[in-house]
Length: 254
Ligand code: AP5
Image 1 (cartoon, rainbow, N blue to C red):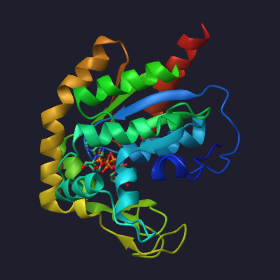
Image 2 (image 1 turned 180 degrees about the vertical axis):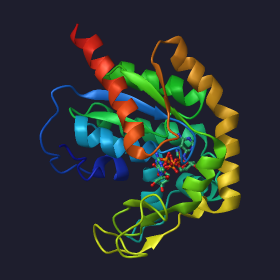
Image 3 (image 1 turned 45 degrees about the vertical axis):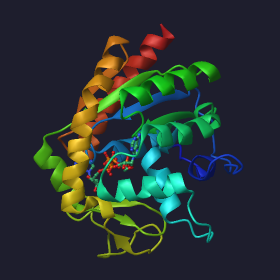
Image 4 (image 1 turned 120 degrees about the horizontal axis):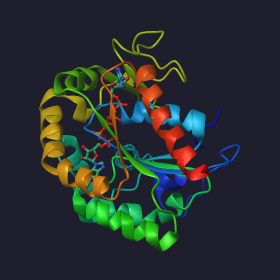
């Protein structure tokens, strides 16, 4: 059983050093997780990490970390624009996201491997990622795309709650906390993300639909795309995720 460390280098950027993250997996995987908002990428990422190691690198988490920065420093002008876009459910500009990932290239070179979650979201970001990975010599093993009907996604997003302190995720019906409104892990208050409100959910789904096809096609052409139906419960979806990883493992070892 592995666990992601504090990911502080990813969340804060260069200059911050991650604490030790436990045993190094024998095979560091390099995956991007694709799929619409709320399909369950973060939920699958937790299980992939527990079983296979790898560090969870979510671009959304970097923005949320900046939004809740308690250092008293005002966000940079580019970050302030990004946070306003995110709150409305819109995509942040390619230039801002690519810069943020480029600054954190050391995380992509990490010996634990990585699960990039929410990046790339556009073809331009996919090209930029290839450039970064080529420079550091860490080719992608696969792009795993999760899909589910829109009605299910809306139900998942509107019921999601996150701990204000440790960011652990819950769902009011599918994954309720033991005590209503309180985090099982740290007792923190559970809140609804600003972009999980109905208007922002609609905007996010539209933004995803407008940019996803070229990205999927890009990875399909390279033979890297793996598709997983994410409409069943998280454990059942993980059976398919594990199957994909085991097939990749067999291909690498043969
Ligand atoms: P980001 O944080 O990446 O959000 P997202 O893609 O909208 O995806 P989520 O994290 O909301 O959903 P998820 O698929 O991880 O679902 P989860 O596992 O939590 O990005 C946020 C914003 O940042 C963007 O809108 C944009 O503004 C900006 N941004 C980030 N990256 C960007 C980029 N590259 N370019 C431009 N802008 C960028 O699951 C959801 C809920 O469902 C949970 O409550 C969970 O418990 C439940 N659930 C999960 N799986 C199941 C299941 N199988 N059955 C039942 N319930 C389930």
